[in-house]
Length: 360
Image (cartoon, rainbow, N blue to C red; front, side, top):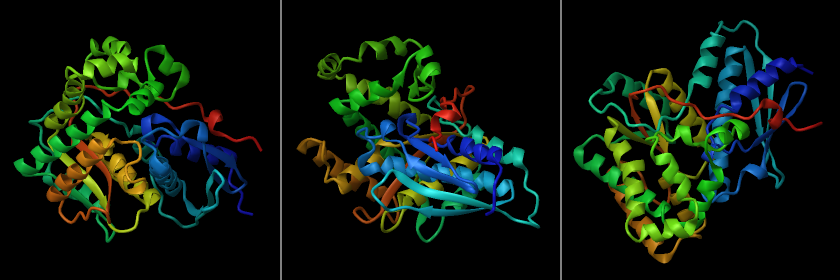
């Protein structure tokens, strides 16, 4: 057997868990093998409303695998991936083999790219434009027969996509289960350092005076009452509309044909890694993609008839401004806002590596 040193396998796993996951749930477990490891799903960190039929988890697994393959290539390792389609939580088996005669790759560069990826939720420098050459390079990372990158350039497209995503987030703020899920994963102060998962309040990119307000809004009854006087519109304005308006570029990654969420996660991560490496600030906008997944995979289960009607209309608006997107057949993998941040980003935490390893 092609035995791989344990320290190399641990390094590959450490790179893998730098991948993004819904609400930073980090829903993965690993079982070490002599020549690789098994990737397992961690049910204790899954099951929130946004994770419809494990779509968000599958995307995160794809992003994780992209990280692993990126570092493996730098280490001179070929990666073989076997996906498992049984009903157990064992998701995939990754095995590695040393390749001889490969051109030397900068391992430090690969590590910096993987560990440097982050989400920036703060306002961007709108007047600092992204060079067209860089946008073309990023588009080429996505472009294939199955994937494309759409950039919302015209004033009409920008206005519509901002309105569409803001309307989506307005619904998010009036949904009881989403509200409760949000507070389940939200971490204030030192709690974030202790749990090292979930959404640390310091990473939300909002003004410091908003943090105590968020803490006060934890009871759903209070939030629901304040929504009657427009709280949900205020939250969507500050949390979505304003950040999107500050972004010089808004883009979407589209997958054509039958859904492949693991493959989509790999493409998404490839794009994100290189965007950050090029000096861009990046924020994914996941509500619309995951709500549309619920609309099509579960016929909108969990939404009211009025909310479903709104989502159908929002998908129509999205399709109208997204060239080549066929609703019902294609998937919106992810929306991103891109730009240049104004201050240093606070990165989300990761749990200790030992918490991810399954006992033999």
